[in-house]
Structure formats: C-alpha cells, structure tokens
View: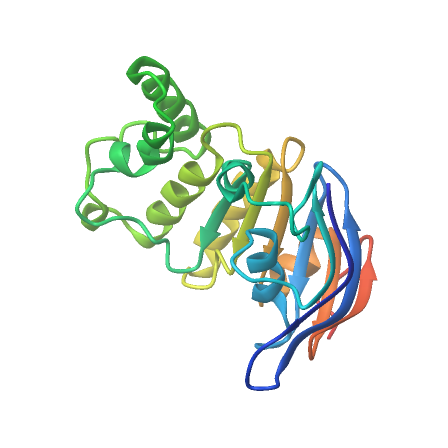
Length: 225
C-alpha cells in the first residue's frame, strides 16, 4: 500500500513541484502516472523512494511513515522497491548475472540463493541464457528486460517504472508490457509514461498529473490530459 496525504514539494527556486496531492494505491494495484513533462510524475516516484523530502503532508509505504522525523531506515525501504528507468542504468563493465545479482550480494545472501534467484527472474523476462553476456552485446529491448529482472529480484513488493518504454520501438514496448502483465498480480506497480497507446489499451487505473496537481483518478482510464 502507498498512501499520500496532502503532499507538497517545493524547491528553493520557489517552484512547487507537487501541490497537496492525496491518493491511495492498494497492494498489487497497477497505476499509470500520466501528464506532460514537469507535471509531477517523477517527483512522486522520488518521494516514494525517499530521494526527495516533502515540504508538507504524509507518505505511507506499507507500514512505514516515511515522512516521520523518526524514520531513518531508508535502506529497508529501498529493499522493498524495485526501480526501472528509461535509460536502463545497467552497469556496462559487469555481465548480466553481475548486474542482476548486485543488490542481493550487498545483502550478503548466499551464492547458491543468488544464482537461483537470477535464473528465476531471467526466465520470467524471457532471457534465460544471457547471464554471461555484457550489456554492449544486447539490444535495447533486451537491456530493458534485464532492468526489469534487476528490479524484481529479491521479491520486492513495489515496482516503480519511470518511462520504461520511452527508448523502445512500439513492438518492443508491447513485449515489455507483457512482462508487466505477468507481474501485476504479484506486485504494486506505479508506471509513469507518455505512451498513449499502452495506457489506452490496457485500461488500468490512471492518475493524471498537471502542474503538480492530481487532476484525475480513473479506475479503468485512458490517456486523458
């Protein structure tokens, strides 16, 4: 569960990036965040990750009040959350296995468990035989599949996707969306996008952002801004 209660974000330049935004996303819900550039979509994702601080309001992530002055365990919060970026953010000097396994190695999980986890997520994204390849050997679509595998490994409950199809052609974008359809019954997914066709075709819950305001919340919405 993710809950925003009257959340605002202001920058030192006097810009209000988010203005008294409130919503609740249930566990295993799928929400598209849409709106023009600068509307507040990425700000919401960064707040959930605690990469930004709210000027006012309350943010709950499951049982954690991450806006409380007493909350300091950012590491625990981020272990629950997988992030998928438009530009993949795959480490070029590490092979695919090393890229996906990195977050588990930091947690000192056994090599056998890491190997099993990597094999499982690579199978889910349709790339079971790519472990020893390097990023330069893969297509953009394959790199985004690897980014998804990295985001979901470790049984993370929440997936934040920031324009994950933005650098992909339409056919590859739909192949990526098939993976998200597999995940949506098991994960809470917040998916920021400008892709009109995907939003209109999937008919999931849609938050429409404009000038830092949440102006529409549609249960089975389309790309309506």
